[in-house]
Amino acid sequence: MTRSDLVKRLAAANPHLLQRDIERIVNTIFEEIAAALARCDRVELRGFGAFSVRRREARTGRNPRTGEPVSVPQKLVPHFKTGKELRDRLSALEQARPNPSVSA
Image (tube, rainbow, N blue to C red; front, side, top):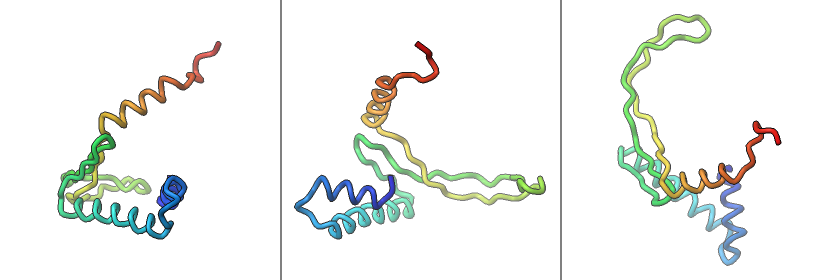
């Protein structure tokens, strides 16, 4: 789902709100999450998951084209951990789907 798909779905579910207001709300939420991560804060959305920042140590990688060793510096990367409610909902979906690898 893209950001515009999310805005369209929210607009359909909330016909009393203008689409431009929904776009502003969605953009504000994403900007606040990004700003919190830039400050190395943790963002938790109960039932959905938590965004945090993890440090990747410096390492020696390889150029895939030449195979030559390349120094990769230390960096901060975003990390997402799903919440229990989301994991449970996904597990329920997986269990409800027929398994295509099992023939009847």
